[in-house]
Length: 333
Image (tube, rainbow, N blue to C red):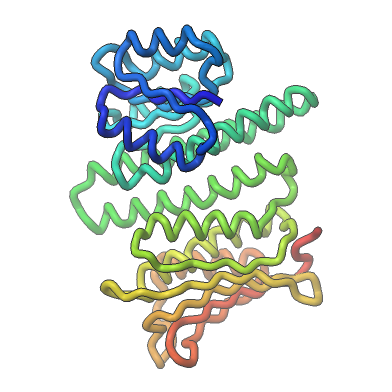
């Protein structure tokens, strides 16, 4: 596959190329910084199989570049990566056919690579589905995914514009929760099964993303028995896992303290499941957990939604153990 990266800022263009290359190490990446370069690349073969474009370039905008690429490849996956856009641009980008809109910053480079992989995977899946005549249902999920990505981008843009640090933090937490839902929905889309989801694979991907976004080197290890979970259980349980791991990353290791977080998913004999999140951090107080914050309040409501039970305790030797028990039926093979 040939990947086209269009940006007139050479520094960010090189950073974007480096990050995308980690996700696509065996593919050709072509950089374009001016119109002559774009014309040259579009005149060569093979045509681009993925477009990463800035919004505002000195000689064009991202929408013009997308239109030019899609005259050659009508369903070419595309991601807009820009620091000069706003809410209106984000909405227009998704409506115009970009698969994702990523706010340009060093911290968002990891998300850029993930967005590119997701866009390519979704396009490949859509092409396969077109051959099997099951496009309508999948297209609905594709639109849902686009809408979730748009919400994430709008939240990110709003957070950047807010001066109040508490409000900014709450917006980022909200964006992370929506991101967790988007990741789960992407699992459904990739699997082509809209009744069940590979929850073990979802947990591994979620844990990797949360650890990467935290950026402090705290290890998050996942041990999960493979199997499919019904969507009506997987969605609330996925949000629970997101809240518990995020809570541990935020509070278990104050200062620059290092540590480890373990996420475990196990079957029970009655086909129920047990989700555990354990850390070796400072631990909850000896007196137990006090009044829950917004995150833990959400966890308790979600656990109740699936008829489960939540236990949180201080571990011997330090750290916290959170255990969520959900009655059967649990994962199926």
